[in-house]
Length: 81
Image (tube, rainbow, N blue to C red; front, side, top):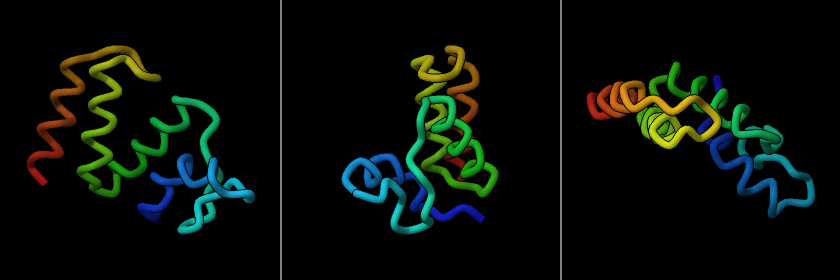
C-alpha cells in the first residue's frame, strides 16, 4: 500500500534535509515520468485526486503524450468516486 504522503514527497523533500516524505519515507521524484508512475499507483488504489491530477497531465501533455480523451476518461472516473 502507498500512503497518501508520497504525493507530498517532492514538496516536503525540497524543504527537508533528509529529502524524503515524512509520512511514508519515500524519496522525492527525479522526473515527471516518475511522478506519473506514482499517480498511476494511487489510481490503482482508487484515489480520485490522483485520477484528476494524471488527467490534467494528459490534458497538458506533462510527462505523458497529450491525450484529451484519456484526460476526460480519468476525470470522469474520478467524478464517479
